[in-house]
Length: 158
Image (tube, rainbow, N blue to C red; front, side, top):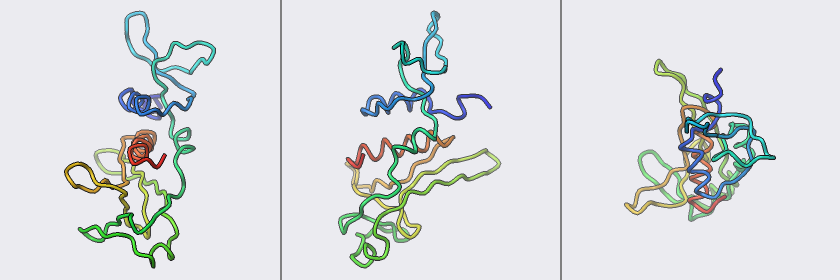
């Protein structure tokens, strides 16, 4: 298996870096003397990498297994959104982290989401008023998890 199948892309790695996510990683992105980008093991004694290339197991350490919910949290109910009720808070206590792999003819799709009772949650809306669901997709586990970290940073939950 090629290393780039198990780490975040350079684009996602740069998004994480720009968002202030600076956890160390086993692998990093480097440029050779011809400015060609490659992935190699991080040498922490040198500071020559320009972004970390995170594996899914490194990123899972930063994702909380549960998120606190309140009556201000939204939950998907069919095609609509409603605020979580006190009864749902009592029943579920928190939103749970779920990770899924969907296999199709086109390849694998990885999903990372937070939900209660199998229903996605959202804490906020974007500028257009659309709910910012806590579900993220990726071509590999690392991409999906990194996108969720970015969403949690954006929602001030991480």
